[in-house]
Length: 74
Image (tube, rainbow, N blue to C red; front, side, top):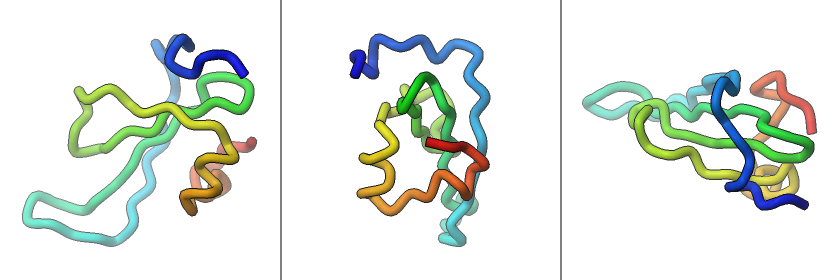
């Protein structure tokens, strides 16, 4: 596997999913984009300027994140 943080995310198409948790400043949501073969970038919709974290499909699955919810495939 290539270095996930070496992959370019410029122009990646991020998809948003919300979990129903609400805060005074709005609902908690994550954004996810496929950035390569078995490589994904995960960000926080409330912090759009923060660098997204990078994960493999197996890591996202282990964390309970269902790629199908984002219409992204492993």
